[in-house]
Amino acid sequence: MPIMSINASTSDMRDVSGSRQDKARQAGNALYGSIHNQAVEPRMENESYTYVYGPERISTHRYSPCSTVSSVRRTFCLIALFDLCFCFILWVIYTQLTGSETVWEAFEQQVANYQFQTSLFDTVMVAALRFILIELGYALFRLNHWWLIAISTSLTCIFLITKVFLFEFSHDGKAENPLSYILLLTSFILTWIETWFLDFKVLPTEKKILLRGTHGEANERSGLLGRAEEGGNRVVHDDDKDRYYSPAGSDDEGEDRYRSLPPSRSHSRKASQSSVNSLLGSQDHEYLKIANETMDMLFELVREGGWITERESQGDMVQSAYIKKLKRKIFKLECTLDISPHELWKDTIDNVNDSPSWNPTLLESKTLLVVDEKTDISYNIAAEAAGGLVSARDFINLRHWGERDQTFFIAVNKATFPDMPPQKKYVRGESGPCGLVFNRVTGQPNRCKLQWFLNTNLKGWIPQAVIDQGLTGVLMDYCKYLRQHIQEIKGRSFS
Image 1 (spheres, helix red, strand yellow):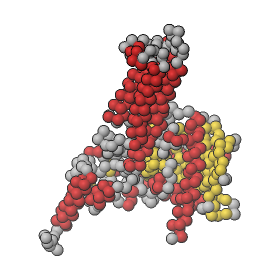
Image 2 (cartoon, helix red, strand yellow; image 1 turned 90 degrees about the horizontal axis):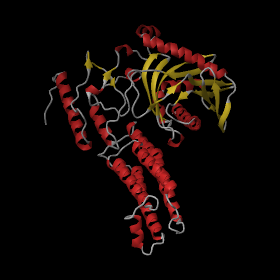
Image 3 (cartoon, one colour; image 1 turned 30 degrees about the vertical axis):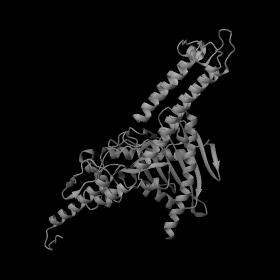
Image 4 (cartoon, helix red, strand yellow; image 1 turned 180 degrees about the vertical axis):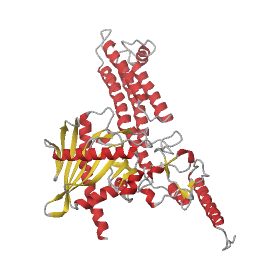
């Protein structure tokens, strides 16, 4: 066993420590798979580390061609097989009831002497074509898009509609065969069931599983590799955690995949006002201008009348109103909570990055930039809503908070952040002027009347009725989760 001299230099100790880290990393790679660019040199600047970040991405796709097929996708492929088998059985029964002298004569009439107006064998061929396309696209090549099922459904519908108009349901003086109607309708219904199942079950479910794996799901590999990282290559100081964003699921294993934050972003929320002002650039002043305008608009919404109740449950109420100034329908949540307004206001400000841990309607919440001690830029990913009809959206929001008219508030509005461009796997939504207002309850200092004004543009082709249902449900769910979180806050206070 080698012996280290007590007079060993600091560089020698770092070499030994680095060697141990390299061995730990190699062990992790051997057990849990390779990682790109294993030998990573830390970015150093004047002997201090720079925290780096990059656009959010997924380094390992759970549904890549080399991975196993998800259970919901296997079910979808089995439905396609059922479609083919069921149509074939119905066609066999139909053929035997056509009135031919023998079964083989009936089959010969349907297949060998095929005519579009008198034979239904083509419905079986169309079902076989659908089966082949689905199995090749969604089982073999693991497609994660709806374009293939859209093509098969469109072609099938065109064929069936044409068939209904031209097919002779009774010919040669023979009575009508009722199975001809059933076979055509069955083919049409099964086609649309496959389309619905892929679009509303397979793709949303796989995306949800993938997001869970990307946003903080613990596993043995991450634990071992995380321990291998300790004390070495990526050091994040406590002051930096408040002002820089590192996407969930990002891989620290490639220097070319990241960029350093601009040096002008070196102030923290605890910095003095004078030092902050000296560091503010033109973009920061634009952020502050938007913050003040948003704050004024928020209090205009507080004074707005004509709210219509959308949903009410146990004192919690969701209302809506069309605001002419914003040219949009706005939602408002009102609920009374067993916590002081100041305490809830401070928790909402300081612990925004921890909100997904208690609020399942959020998948991700990260602070991108601290503009000053009362303003920041955050990145949020909202979970899908309305039973998967509204897919996950991501937002970049400007938050500005303070106290006005003896009321605590957090004003929210959309913002641009060049270092966080739109992500391919999310629809980038937009927040209009909105926010939260924390009102005191007269004579009850430990109670808070919360008002959340929600002004959002989800983008995409979504019917307004679906949006209303989804947003109303999100607001009511938030109230339920917030009450559970308040109990946790109280538990920490007493402990």
